[in-house]
Length: 121
Length: 107
Image 1 (cartoon, one colour):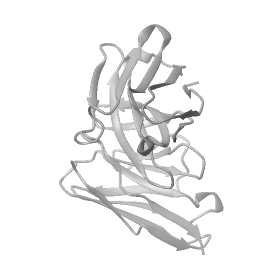
Image 2 (cartoon, chains in turn purple, cyan; image 1 turned 180 degrees about the horizontal axis):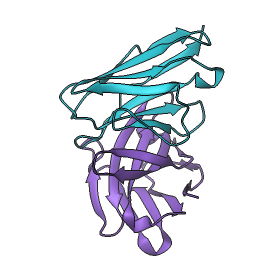
Image 3 (cartoon, helix red, strand yellow; image 1 turned 180 degrees about the vertical axis):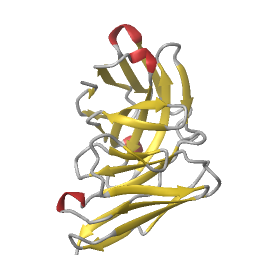
Image 4 (cartoon, one colour; image 1 turned 90 degrees about the horizontal axis):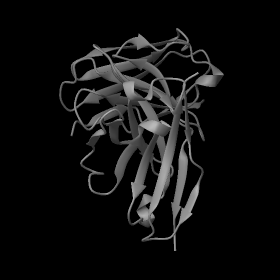
């Protein structure tokens, strides 16, 4: 069974660093890209970026480039999303998802349960 | 970035109604268009990919169509469990942007 299990909710202060995780199981981790999606409170979905764990090739949305770092560890089949200095505007739910690149279709097929990140002084 | 505009943003409908949601892209995206359903407090769920391919396990009352810059998601007969927010996503070029969402509520 394909599963993406994300780390638990975080409460942080502005300026603090944070790394959240997405543990993959039930499929070959190095055969799929993993993506991250942000959802601000009460708002829509925003594509942040994707990573190919086999070589850590990463594509970022310009909106998030330089604001976050996406990484992956093949040995633990885990993808990560990290911030070096959080802002209150980073308060959101963050989802990881398995990204399928097919010959005629590209999509996110499996999603994690989401990680709520709250940033407040 | 490619912009996706969904219409309507909000839709009030009754059980049994036929519902159509439109997604317009700011430039051509071939057939690289997916639709997701999200219920409150839950992760999004893939419904349709490659414009019209139904994901495994998704009821056949859901269908997708379109090409180029205009795409539609149709629910042929709305069921109680279909009340949710629906998002389109283009995966033709980076960043793989989402539409702003269409909330389907009970009339």
